[in-house]
Length: 200
Image (tube, rainbow, N blue to C red; front, side, top):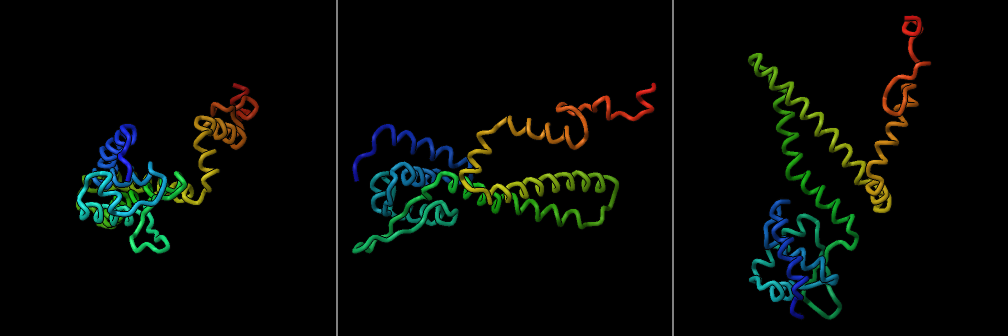
């Protein structure tokens, strides 16, 4: 395998550092960055040589990436070695990361909150604590419901939605205007005010 350029090395090193913040260790992050930036399937020997990692570390890293569904296994005709490549679509990578983080971090929290909300509060302090937990549970449930909706969007629709940015708020303001008969800023129109208020 050709020696990595300084640009590619910089990307791989940075991705390794960032990976630890996303729940992926540095070695796994660097393996993934190499596969992503190369744009072609690589086998474990290629990866070990390019990153100066041991073969065993590469094998463990690839298993973890497969568990995250961030790489897939390939075989080439006449070659007994296993090759690996990431999803070709960047949106598939983005959604796989979000889904795995939800499975590892969000779902255990929801499970704990459900159990806590089923308990009978032993004091006023426990009642208050449960109310706070209920608020958190409802917020996370709403967020995961939104995430499920996003997962069903096509990459093209998702990209269009994200590019809209603040325009989404404008659309929601207009929707509320027609729903409540108010202005786009949420204020009630004068014609929509009760007659008693108009006579005051």
